[in-house]
Amino acid sequence: MWGWLLFYGGTASVAFGSAYYHLRPDDNRVLLDTLPMMIAYSSLFSTFILERLGERIGLSCLFSLVVLAVLSTSYARTFNDLRLCMIFQLIPCIAIPIMTFLFPPKYTHSRYWLWTVGVFILAKMEALADMKIYRANNYIISGHSLEHLCSAIAPVLVTVMLMHRSCRFPRKSYCFLLLGSGSHDRLGEIKECP
Image 1 (cartoon, helix red, strand yellow):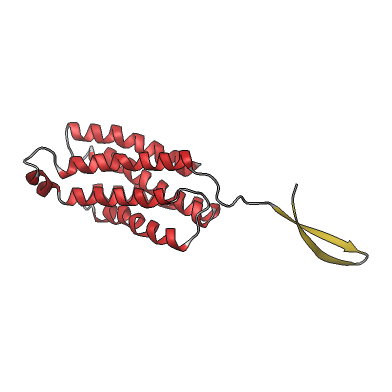
Image 2: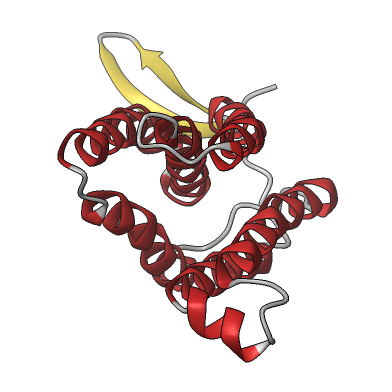
């Protein structure tokens, strides 16, 4: 739940931070655009890890990745070097498809994870080809603008996934019963808890 809360909070904050930055682009304002985006990326990735590998690993990743997002954004602002932020955004785009095939999903509609990653990759490619796209369509729309539009599709895909999915394998809770027979205690049967 915390991962989804941070993801949607980060996504909503990106809208305001990006609007504030793009009204008057400035090195001081870019932090309000980048930090919420990094928090949204890290919380989405840790939520994926939580669903595939377990709650303990996912929550520890959530904390670690959010701290790393703040540190990488601070590094980018301090040293004017975006490489760490770019690597931070690229790792989930590589890891999620690999983990999708290695670890079984807990929920249905897991293909939406791949679609979301595809949209993120397309957005990054549009950002890299910013001026080429701008010239190719006779200066109507830039690659950077298309990047924003593609990035806005990702939360929509995730929301559709959450609306339609259900638990693929319902987990049952099991109890270990200790059966005693005189002085010889032994581990008894494993039974389903009521």
